[in-house]
Image 1 (spheres, rainbow, N blue to C red):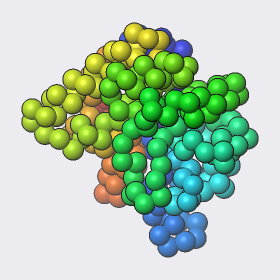
Image 2: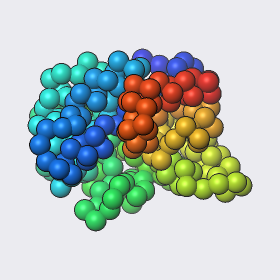
Image 3: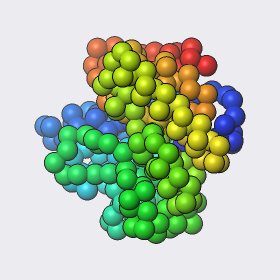
Image 4: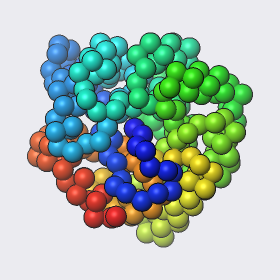
Length: 250
């Protein structure tokens, strides 16, 4: 989800709400409920700045019909997470979401386990970045917070990177502090090179504030935790609380 701000400028940190796991619950039993598109509307009403959805190759949560409905019904920018495959490229070019975040994907994983190796896969990724950009889809690469991956994103011409915060989220103490510094350094390097830095994965009420305080970050994408909290408090309340914490960091 893009704004008009430059990569290193000030302003409110945007919140993208990932609604995949509403679909996970629906698909566990089949049928139509709970409806992920309804969740997207609720997130929008609660203050989300955009909606993120991952159309996986095995369709384990979001489906093609969900994507069609979101493109037709939601008023917020849609960030489509996708693997670098010909099938997903064709789907993205057909629907033209606001943004497309290229992520690594393995059938056996429960969730995305790490960042894309943009440095090692630059040759194969180039045509995906080029074709998506040519279609006026804002391309993001979901990467680890290290200089080699930022440099690869620069060479590929990606306007956005999303820094993987999963390692940070699962560490504690000094190790977490060191990982936070890696995130801050990567965000600063991306911004210095004209790339807008985002971040996401594993963020919760307890760990989001230090990440949100990184000044170059322009957007956080958060899903699983918010959907889990919604079971107890409602989605509007969970989004509002995350929004408050993010704002407090700025």
